Image 1 (cartoon, rainbow, N blue to C red):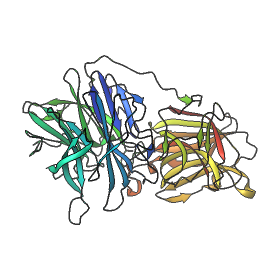
Image 2: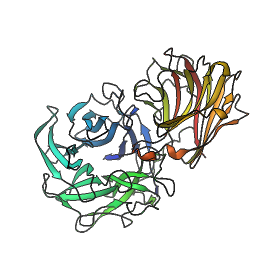
Image 3: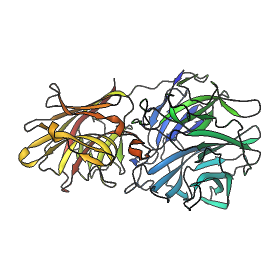
Image 4: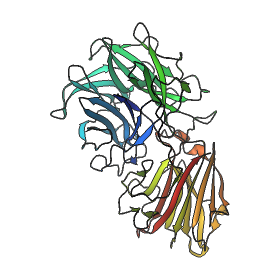
Length: 523
């Protein structure tokens, strides 16, 4: 059986692709660098993380991008020995306007290197490239419409792409305007049995999310909507364990079995709060005699477990829980906030066996933060690090952060506070309301090092500290992990909780902190 989600924690907008005996998934990374998480599988049940696709700032420059902007909905395709990856770089997302840049990069291997990006358009987001049997290539994306009195989601548009000239050519045509579910986006086009099938996401990314199928004999339409739409949704089923299900992508196995990967989330019961973010699950599908797609287990609700395909099992080695920072580069599980891991602020060689971070801008910056983070992937887990740090001013701080964005975070940090001496305590922000929790700080003058630990138990987050790794003290009380969620405070973000090692020096002197290890384990 395949257990859902297959990619737990902040892995939304999955695009799935099979080439030969290999399966690949790409997921959105938003403001985190490098861009686009890539996964590989041989059996659809076990997945390994590959190097990220967008490794260079010439491919992706996120400095100044808004939170939950950046890389949206990457889309994989393959033709004639070349892998194609399309993505949107969202530069502005507030208000009626969207500043959108759609690009395509190519590679001879999913391991890269990926090419420099080719700009496509800015008319909407969720681009997808379809390779037709006659060799033509077609770009699909949703059309954004900012005009008064119009739906913001103006349907799915299509235009031909010329791979030789590397540009779009010919007229733009609206091929599908969706259903009354609204918010039509996330197109995928495939050809089967004499039809072009168009799979779209509808209803937005929240509780009304859905996957809807339409078909046409001609690529340009008109497209007929499945009379029994949507194929999948959790709307109207608030108690289902996998909520917000939609944005599906289809793949056919070597033996003719069909699966759909899709977005889902696992909110705390009775709430919409999902600190693990939007995750990726997989559903087995079947085709009806009259040529429509259905979930194999019947109904429209996504299943927690589905039968695996008729393929040999192919597990990958388990990731070690503890990273001692002995490698010459950061592990693939880490990302940095908007900027690449450069020598100007990060080093794994200046002090071998340590990650050295030079303090830069605050946790509220959209430009030059010094943060290295990994995804929160479990509702019961422990994260721990050992830090050596000698702050000299209250403008200098370093430690362990649970971070959603600049408005919502918890930060266990060490700082120097004038006559009060060196302090270890928790800073927090909930919907932009900042707090220091001074009444529960520890005086840590004379500590030789700082062992920092965070323990997650469902919705409860607690921090602990020790001078030697043996004598632990609680710091800051109990915190609500639900704050670090897409829909907390009605903000409608799109990412998930990241656990980060970070340093700030608001004086601009670059005071460094050394991290001996980082451990993350599911309990």
